[in-house]
Length: 147
Image (cartoon, rainbow, N blue to C red):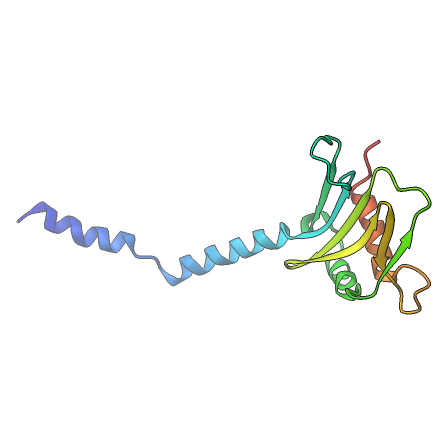
């Protein structure tokens, strides 16, 4: 009997994947992606965009960095997207500070401070929205600005 005919069935047996094997792998990869989910980002010194600037500080807060992930996701969901207040500075903030929250692929403005100040307003437009202020505090705690 030809040996090559015996090798073919063995290759077919060992190359097949069981449903349990693929299910376990997909579950592990989804757990890894949940812990590496981007929630907050703080950028210092990027405005105005100057290619010669070398002192741009970017800090990302991932889901794995947060202790109470459920409450942070709830705060992100509460931040208004369309009620943005813009205020003028007498003197531009230097360096600039930008704070963004992320919900999936959506980039949500929390605060942008440069020659103007932009942030999600509270319903009465008398200050920053409560959820945005709480997320700004978390961003400053997790990403202290460079000196």
